[in-house]
Length: 442
Image (tube, rainbow, N blue to C red; front, side, top):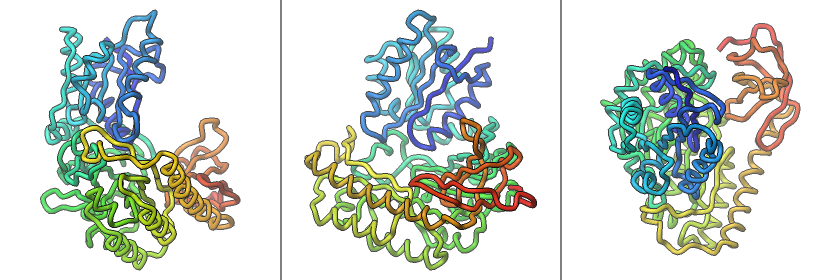
């Protein structure tokens, strides 16, 4: 009998990819997706452990579900993702409303786990690290995502053990999917209508399968006629190898935005973080890429007020931001994660931490505004993804992932078109379609 499943996703792009693949899987046991909470026979929450208070957000969300279903039949409640991996035993004890808990490497077991619960009503958790079996299983189920821009996980896990990060404990060791398995899935996405592929991994540029590297994968996907744009995230400076840098010379479809988290501009803080790169090596990567293509831009992640960060360390971060002029970057005050090396380190004064964050964000936001301002009056290529929610405009993205809004007909969705930028703000470009005839079909 067909049942309805509501899936809510927190966190990173990989969780979005995982949620789509979970749905591809549960379709096999007659689940159909609903966008309405109160219709659900099954409520699935895909969790993220990166941001602050991630665990409490899960329980808050479950509380909302309990209220919605107070006078209804209780749905099957499943919690998956990184919080599920980290808190699996405690979760089932603390919140009886939760029925099943699955870690990120156990999604291939979800159908059997659901069916077993429905027959035996026995609460259960699956949190073994088994990426190989998971991706072998998922490779046999067609990826039915049909977005113009689609995520594709190629690598999971992390061996870096940065002192602030829980990923090695929630996603396990680094694992690279088989090369041909990824290419086959990319072909499926292209057949579904995807024009852009965003390759995902906790350390995506650490991808290494039988001596195939990320550079090989990009150049192979470049051959797919339906795919017009290729991106990857998130990368680590340590794995920004010469062959990957050279790919920016050889690829016509690799976009000129490099998201390369630096975390701090201070070598002392990078060492305390166990980041395994220095500012010198980071700048060498920056300069090599700029030499290949001066239009390449960088975005990054910054942790502000990491334990031990003194005023001169903070000034080094400001200096780096001024030098590179990062765009579209993320910045957060350090927040301890249980189980990590940095979990119990003494925190910097909250008021000073906030002051530093505000200074950094002012710099970063100014870079975005200036970058967008430079595009006013210019024509740029954009990939049209869909209509805005109010249906009034077409929504597209520039080569730098910036949102672009303009008027046009629905037949432009999935095409690369030229738009003349009229105005901008920090996050969005606004423009007019140029030469609507003879546009490039992506």
